[in-house]
Length: 133
Image (cartoon, rainbow, N blue to C red; front, side):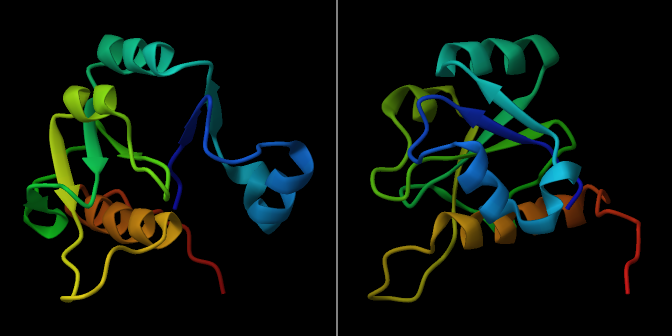
């Protein structure tokens, strides 16, 4: 989708070249992937650039489709099992949720990120323009 991906260590999964290549399929070479050694490192980087931190969380107070995204937004997602730690919740400008049907908990992290990223790109007119057939 022509957006960068930041991995903040320690992350909730093993990030070695073999696993990354398998999960990235044919697209890994096209991804702008940045690894940060800690939350503090990532947060400092975002603060210096003026990025807005937007957290996706099941405890969010705003449905993602009701949020006004801006081009400098950084979507944050925590671990599927435990969510984001308290310091991430505190640093986030907004905490967004995906409305779910009664009796359901949440979507997996890939599905949730794709849904919200798609809406953010739509609102900011930043969908990739290349067409492949």
